[in-house]
Image (cartoon, rainbow, N blue to C red):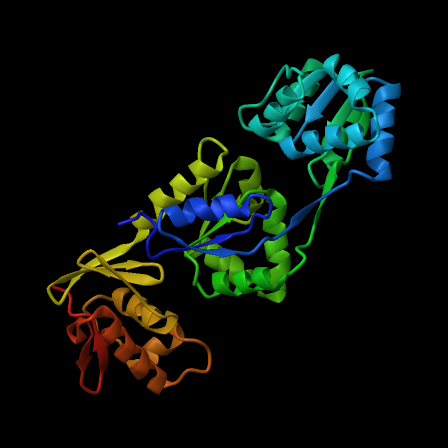
Length: 361
């Protein structure tokens, strides 16, 4: 059986969402795609053109390449203005710092050579390296990564550098926000098992979309829903919120999916019930190795019963597991559907006038 069969994973990426979804689905996951942000290129933006002109008029001594898409977009925009060759000539003379492997790849694809790259892929390490190296009296061009970087640039200026900020693209809300709001609800109600982030701004966008329900999202991420980040930079805003994260050693989509495939099955609960092996996997139960998908209500009742295996749970105590407004009759219906879904009524035992239990072996 595929490692992620029975699990649901949310995808907040936009640009490479189809690639990430395909990698997850190949391992058996059910995927919910809900871009938190989209990238808007600034090919015709006056600020980008002005920053490019400044680099040509005052060739930078240092260039900070933050992202691959940003560096490619900058050179493509310069190509459209007929400035690509002069810009490459200027950049070739600079000390180029590539923040991560994607930025390094874009630099080298342009025929340029990067001199240094941080192991952590973090802006903080880039800044520490440049300050230690010394930037006093130098011109530093910083290719921004979607947002302004006021602290980074202010620190360089305080050290005596003349900083040219190069805004190549910006983050914008998704054209259709409905999928993101749906994902917020799914996270709050623990109906996804993991949610992936490939950029730090996406974290803020998800919480902003949650609005007053942000606390419920944070609570779910701290306790039940795995926050899976492509790298440490993406993970930073979650860690600041006290949310445990998983992240691969190398910031790659394939490595991110492998980390999820390792972690989710490890969290699955397995019990011996009514002479069967029963494993709870996200939106499905595995009975003696056979996957049996379940609707949210019976799955919620099964989780509640499995949290106290062998113990009797009253209908009233099972109610909180169901959607708001449900009554004890809804519990009875969920139990009936659960028995049918598992294929054997013996999985859930009725204790007269008391409630239900899992008859664990």
